[in-house]
Length: 158
Image 1 (cartoon, rainbow, N blue to C red):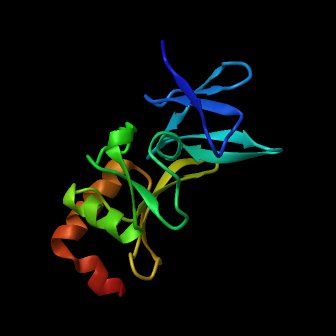
Image 2 (image 1 turned 30 degrees about the vertical axis):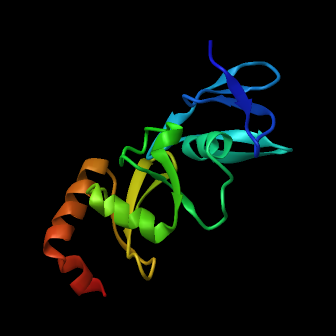
Image 3 (image 1 turned 90 degrees about the horizontal axis):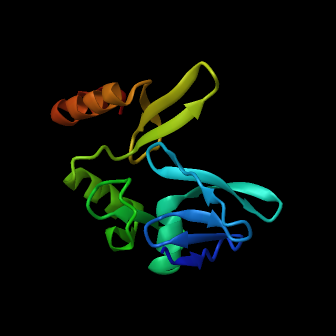
C-alpha cells in the first residue's frame, strides 16, 4: 500500500513517493497532464494554481524550495520524478546540464487557444527575446539541433 505525505505548499493534497497526488479529504487521485512536465491546477485557498509534479515531489520528500532556483532532473528525463533524480540548481546550471544531456535549453512549451494546441518557442538565453516558433515538437527539436551545429541563427539575429 502507498504511503502518502501532506504537501507543504498544498495542504489539501497528499503525495506518495512515486508521485501519486490525491485530495486529502476525499482520497480522490488527481490526474496530472503530460506536457513538457507533468502538471495540474490544484486549489490553494480560493484559487487554483498550476502545480508541477517534480516541484511537489521535491518539496515533500527532499527539502524546501528556494525562490529563484529551479529543479533539475539529474538523468535528463523530465518525466522521471523520483526524489533521487531531483536536485535544486540555478537556471544557468540547469541549462548547462541540459546541454550535457543534449536537451534544448530555453525551448519553451506553451498552449494557445483552440486553433493551435501547442507552440514551441526558442528564446535567446541572454536577452530572453523570441528567436523562432514551431508548432510541432519534432520540428522544434530538429531546428534546435540544426542551429546548435551551425550557429547561424545567432549570427543573423544578434
